Image 1 (tube, helix red, strand yellow):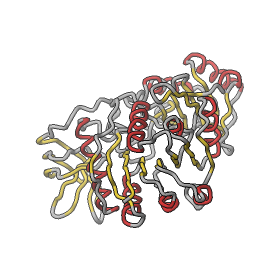
Image 2: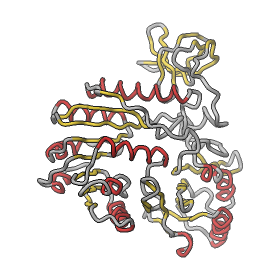
Image 3: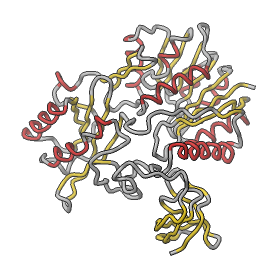
Image 4: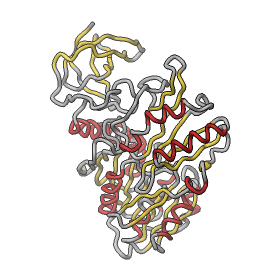
Length: 432
């Protein structure tokens, strides 16, 4: 047993201490605390340790809300106050921008905050039949290993989704293919709750009867995702293929989507992020805007109501069709959508010599490296970059600032996933 002062911490919930000149990461320790610890794993550059006792607690330490916190890998920061989480995540963003991109924002934006609990309207849960427990486990993977957490609820999931974890365990355990269902996806929307079960074998007639009874009892849309094709098949076409939808832009738009389509998981943050994006892009009735990685039109359509023309570009053909449908459904005729490989050279061909006043980027974790040069060539005065990975944002910020003639005017964090290690952010670049 050793004791030490915690110098810093990671978003993964590990405190950093130094013992005999070597870094040691301590699960569950907070910056500024004095803790006792036991080293459990030695690495060449660092060691890992378990927390034995908090000898002097940080004022930011709070009691975790979830029974399964510490075992479940879904959350890492429930023991840190909301203010402490925001401070930590902004520090992570600042460090990445400085260390990787060699940039710093001219000003910091106020954090975009929302509900701390029950915010997650989409989730992909692992499923595993465990003989030793005599039942099926449904949940997120355990922290640090691929086993499924033995959990009966979740504080971050929308209550309608969290309430299904225990019943799902019982349902799948009653099926003949209980060992052939590796995954369940849940989507809670303004119109319905959808459940997608990935099945590796065909369900029997008795299985189908059980599934129908479960669907009817819980008021769900239930779809099967069969192995090999990835296609979604409604359990019953007349009941389970109804469109899912959510409201946006002050409830004035309705966007439809499929059960496995990408949507922002936190509805409240999505709404506030939209307002911030509109503020930073500053469109007017004469503006021409470009929305890359546009998905189903989440930002494209609200922006089109404030601009002359918006072009949305997306790599997923199904999302492009959905975006076109959403534009038509909402009576928006000045938004057009194109499909292009945004990880390759397609975007330059799609854009050609077009000029835009401002650009919105909302890339996946890999970032937007392939589109930066074409974007810079379209003469936009402003770029708003929404990021789900501070490292790739920092890398791309370095290119925009040091190679393509922009400055980092503002940056800030989005509290899209409270209590977790995810650091979401937004940055505004202005042409010099």
